[in-house]
Each structure stands twice: as C-alpha cells, then as structure tokens.
Picture 1 (spheres, each protein chain N blue to C red):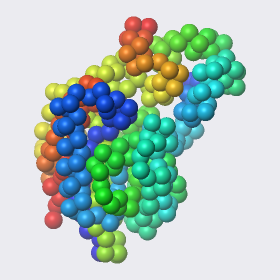
Picture 2: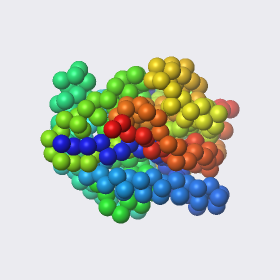
Picture 3: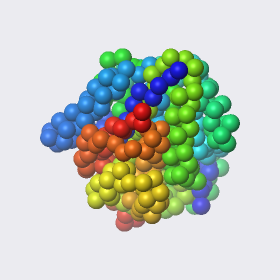
Length: 81
Length: 275
C-alpha cells in the first residue's frame, strides 16, 4: 500500500533546506502532513522496514539519506528490521 | 534529412559521484576509461543532438502524475537538482525543440502517446554519464524520460518499439542534423529494498550476451529475470530504446564491471547502427 502523504513528505525533503529543517525538528515537519499517528511514530523510530512497505524504495532511500542515516545502517534496518 | 549518428549506453548511480574517492583505484581507472572511451565515441559521431534516455528519479514527477514516457520539448532544461551534483558544469542544458516536437508528433501518429515537458530538471541519471564522459562540447540534449521507478512500468516490448519510433522520427526529420542516442542506467542494482547493495554479475553478463539475440528471446529473458535482479535493473528499458533505435543488431561492449562501492553493475555499450 502506498501512503501518499508519507511519500509526499519524503519527496519534499529532497530539498536541502527542507531536509535541514527536518533534521532540526522532525516532529514539526511531520506535523505539516496528514500522516497517521502510527506511521508518524514509525518515522520517528526510524523503522525502515515498516516504512518500506508504504512508499517507493527510491523515496525511502532519499529520505533516510537526507535524515543523515548511513547506507550500511539503512541496509541493515531494511533486512533485519 | 537527419541521420542517426550512433547509439550508446552507460550506467549511472549517485555513488559514482558521492563515493568516487572510495572506489578502489583499479576500478576507478576502469570506470574512468570506460566513460571516457564512450565520450570519445560520441564525440567522433559528431552529434548535433543527443537524445538521452533515462528515468526520472523523483526530480520532476511525483505520485500525482507519473508518465510512462515524457519527452522534453522545451528550448532548454535545468541542470541536476541534487545537492551533491552541484559541481556539474552545466546549470542549463540547451535542447532541440524542433526535433523533440517532431518526435512527439510522429510517435503520436503511430499510436505512441508520450507526455511532454517544456522544462525538465535533468537529474543524475542524465548528467552523471555526460559529466564523466568529459565531452568537450555538449550536443543539444533532448531528454526522453522512461519510467522505471514507480509501477506500472512501460512494457519491455513497448520500450523496444519506442526505439524504432525514435529512429523513424530521426530519419523523417527534414533538417540536416546528426542525432545520437544515449541510454543511461542499469545494469543490476537494488535501491531501497532488502537486497540493496547486491549486484548480480551473472545476470548482467547474460543480459549483455542476450542483446545479440533475436528480439523476442531478449524480451522474454528480461521479462522473466528483471523482477528478481534488483529494482535498478528495470532501467535496462532505456537500453532497449537504444537497441530499438539502432536496429537491434547488437552492441559492442565497451566495458562491464561490477562495482560494489557504487552498488551498480556498470555497463558501457556502443551499438552497431543499422545503415
């Protein structure tokens, strides 16, 4: 299932200024989108495997790159939750 | 009349820029040589226009509207939006609206409806190969965006057929122009999925071999194999467009090497163009 608003946030955070804003205050940026409490919690918990089922894989990677996660950690979370 | 000046392919991937310094020296040398060799072949073909076939990596389109094929028909297009592509030397890439509009019109007559854009952001898919090839003079760039990122993806047969449309539009364009095709992307890689980092070298080498096979065999092989060899391998659609444009006579492999540091099976090809 594709979560449109989660994907939209990931898409928007490709902008360096938006990504910087997210890194400074993730909760504030998340509040700009009608994302469910469950999904919001998973974003804040960096639950890569859960979010992978709800968005495009390229957007998922961009988001965690923009959020400052290294590829090794990202891949480990994708594989092992 | 315009002529098809050549058809080429090169892989792309963000880590070819972001992790370039971390690539082992021997692989860096081979990659550099392969990009340069392709650049020399393109320069020798003296194209006035280069049709670059690439996916859009969420730079222009979002879930609101994801075209299967979009052709850039504007006067020029923007350089790459990615912050790590800031050093790319062109912020504005002149295009060729006359040929691009002709391509759209001629394709439409044959039942191939593309979307059009009068201004695209040309992301790393287009710009990494152009950058690494070190072309002294950049031809006018006509972008042809083929969706290999967000399903539903255009069928492989359709991509081959688009290549034939492209060749037909080149032949029927009245201006005396040399037009080349550059497909970018592939071969195997996996992005944002549990297999991320995997490179399927056997698949890549077999895919390269199969490009010398009859069209139906090639398509059947890819239809069976692509779903299990990383989502990035879907970009081989762009190679099929070049293959179709060149008359499906196979290509000369400039080089192939799996590069774990950039998580891409990197392929470089120059087609034998039908006379």
